[in-house]
Amino acid sequence: MSAQPSVTRLYDAAAHDGRIKDDAAQRRVLPMLDRIVRELAKAPAPAPQGKRWLGRLFGGSAPQPASGVRGLYLWGGVGRGKSMLMDLTMEAAPIAAKRRVHFHEFMQEVQAGLAEARRTSAQDTVRPVAERIAAETRLLCFDEMQITDIADAMIVGRLFQLLFDAGVTVVTTSNRVPEDLYKHGLNRQLFLPFIALIRQRLEVVHLESDRDHRQGRAGGEQVWFTPDDALAKRALDAAWDDLTDCAEPEPLHLSVMGRKVELPAADGRVARAGFQDLCGKPLGPADYLAVADAVDVLLIDGIPRLGSQNFDAAKRFVTLVDALYEAKVRVFASAADEPERLYTSGTGSFEFERTASRLREMRAADWGKPEGDETGATP
Image 1 (tube, rainbow, N blue to C red):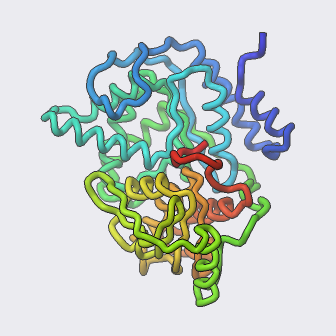
Image 2: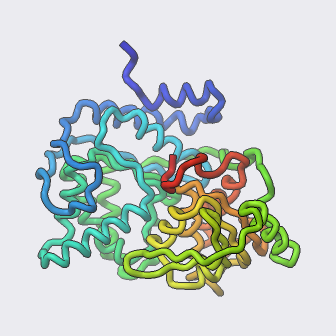
């Protein structure tokens, strides 16, 4: 009989095969993740439900009793391997009722569920959403927990209290210590109980590796052109011609929650848009997830320097890159500077370190959706 899967065994195999570099800081986290996997294996399984909860918001069995499994909040700098450790946990967990999702995407689904509950005139709109998640999911893995939207900030405390009480185990990554979540946000005092809940129900661990594992990866063809001048434009024109066999572009219209999102130029699953087209308009996570789902390659013209002068556009760009990264979209861009030097000071510059690191990783020669993948899902 083969040994029970564990995060440590999967980590050892990946390090032995050269898929990851062995890291002492990462190894210190492995026993905690192994504990979560073991306790999930012993916890009672919920009654079978469908694969997705959002489309069937109401109905299904009641949430299961709390299992007592304590989750993990893993925070630290960019490129330290947080997402990799979370993915190994997902792979090792010997249960079917598990889901790995970017936090932005999850909260979009929750907000849609709340809107559906309001249409039924439900007095308590959060409980049915939480019950549906808990009925179908025993392990939730969130990549990059961050709270920037007041609508999310006002509901996460009660939502997660209900999920924890129903026995859902949460493993999440973040660049920030919990006390820095929603920092300086509107009505932040109403958010503080959620921080206390994280400390109570999740083990909070700082991944203190001094190595950025995204840096130094082998690059492929040039995809980032700087400065943003005539030469950069010609380089993107050449990339377009090469990717589309000189096709004449047509606009791509996407329907998102009753709105229309337009990419000015597209051919098949290759699209091109200016920074202002993507980030100068009031678009949000759902719009960017739709873009990432619709294309395999995106060319972006004219990324400027970012800061207080264009703070809203900069926040949208961070959300856009998150969506493109999760969906493995290949990005070509012209920009005012290298990613690490686009946003160097002021409010938001800390969060942008992760974005710059992701953009650097996305230059790798093997970056992109697997051939034939038309779903936009992360493999």
